[in-house]
Image 1 (spheres, rainbow, N blue to C red):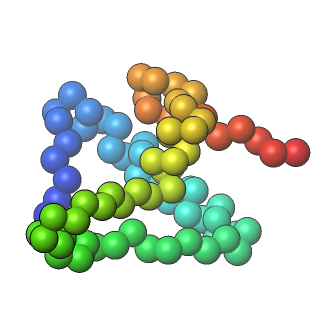
Image 2 (image 1 turned 30 degrees about the vertical axis):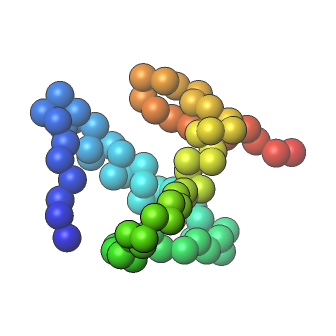
Image 3 (image 1 turned 30 degrees about the horizontal axis):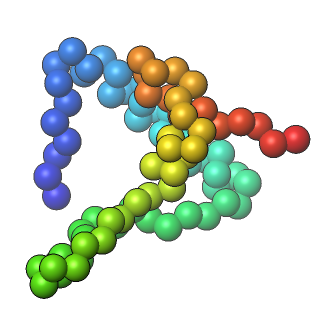
Length: 81
């Protein structure tokens, strides 16, 4: 699998983001919340003129809820009470 390119000016954010990711995964597991794994490979596209798009949940969150912090690209996730 190819590695992700991180521009030099963002290298210092990799470790905190990785830690936050692991914290989120641990919190989901603690609450017994499952989710589908992100696909490693996408199917071969249909080249016969059919168009389709693939969207993941985070895209919907950003589209409908927006960002709480534009500079850090943190999604706004309102708490439900």
